[in-house]
Structures are given as structure tokens and as C-alpha cells.
Image (cartoon, rainbow, N blue to C red; front, side, top):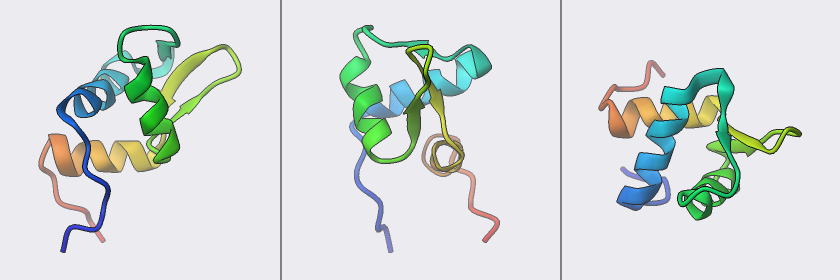
Length: 74
């Protein structure tokens, strides 16, 4: 059963971009800022002290399950 909040297409794209930028992170204030804030609220991203967003462990797992269509090892 699906028990995770639905991610809009724009938020899925923002989550994917977080994986692409890696350790550099995404700066705050870009067009996908509202999605990054929503991802942060869901625990899938975090805002670092330098003002850049990075993906969390939960975000990496969600990206694998929803975007890459990988099943959880659990």
C-alpha cells in the first residue's frame, strides 16, 4: 500500500536535481525553491547553513523508489 505523500511532477524533478548536483547542493532562491521547501518539510531535503539544499537519506530512498523505480531492500 502506498502511504507516502504524493509528489507533484515539479517536486519529483527538484528531488532528481538534488541527486544530480551531489555535494554541491542547490542554492535557495531558484524557481524550484517552493518544491525544495516542500521536500524539506517532508524530510527528503535539508537546507544547509551555507544556504544550499541537499538530499537526505530519506530523499535518496524516495528518489530510488519513485524516480528510478527501485524497490527497497527492506
